[in-house]
Image (cartoon, rainbow over all chains, first blue to last red; front, side, top):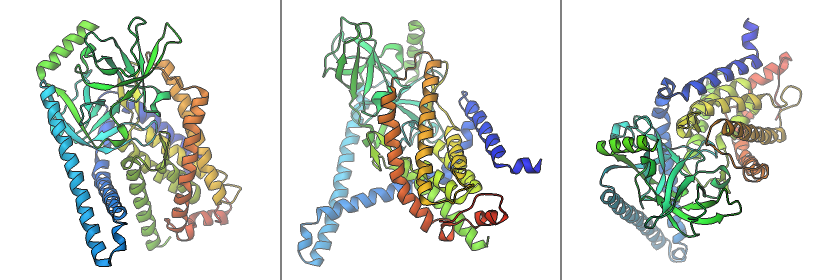
Length: 294
Length: 205
């Protein structure tokens, strides 16, 4: 028995079997396995914040150095002084940009008055093409809760659709990006009585930063350059959130006309996002709409 | 193993684990090509297990997998169509990668840098091919879920770029483990003892 337990192949096989069971259990709704990772955050979150801060400081410092190349020809003392001033200037510019972005975020509140808007920073990004859920710093402790069957829209500072919340933890939430193949949203051309269709993430288009548009009626084919916004059908997302523009249309198969859409939101440059949580009455209306649709 | 060596081992492993896992999910532009980025943590796990043996690799891989699941768990569409995060897949992947790395031509052939890189390349190929195959199968099981990637797209847009990027990332990671790694001279003394006993793999760099 002891020999068996020390056998590496046996150990590997048993470990992998146990892990398979963990994966299956973990994917069940409300599984306690999800809470097992909470203590990990206590260790890795401070490290990640430190790494992020260091990276930002280094890039800001590097920018200051490169900006100061012309000044470097002058005397040593003046150069150091100017480099420092340049560094401070960059910092201020950064702060100014952030201020303008936050001003735009306030605009979101005005447009979607039936929604509570929760701002959050992006904590961690995708690891690779499959480990693709991103984590943002707002959760139950901020007052965000995700009911079964509910979907919370996530927008960037310019109010463009980024994705939706799929999991809310104590201090953070997991976001499914709109490029992901599991993502679906009903959209329409941003015009009066604009044609509606389904926008889905697609594995083959994801790396080009595009989404697939399906369910297109042959009589209402969108044009390249048309702006697409959420239609509000199904009640999961509010109506009118800008998604992106039509980049190409494929009419080669009349029974399955598709198009590609380039989202407005630049996923790679996301730093801050906003989670839209509907008020109670809105949730009830949404449930009624969804029930009527089904 | 003496106490200072053990302390060095734990500190270096902890440092690399935290550093690589956080860098991977914090900076989006590092070693990225056509939407694919080098998987630093995966490469690290394969190299640790190849260079320093099964037990180091499995423990390191398990911890790396837990952190990966915490930072950026994969999402799956369940049979009823809901999308959820699937915890445990990162853990499974990293433990499997460690088991693979530790058994990659380590019994009869001396561990060397060429085979170290080859272990990263083959592990990446295996991961990507099996991953695409499983996703394809799952897409056919779940109603409404489609997987439109053709074979040529899978090869040119996913498998090949990922393999090349991981190979590029393997060079500095190998050098770090070899010269600033958990063991002096980049050699795990336990593996040398096992070689003397003639019952396991061994290491001469």
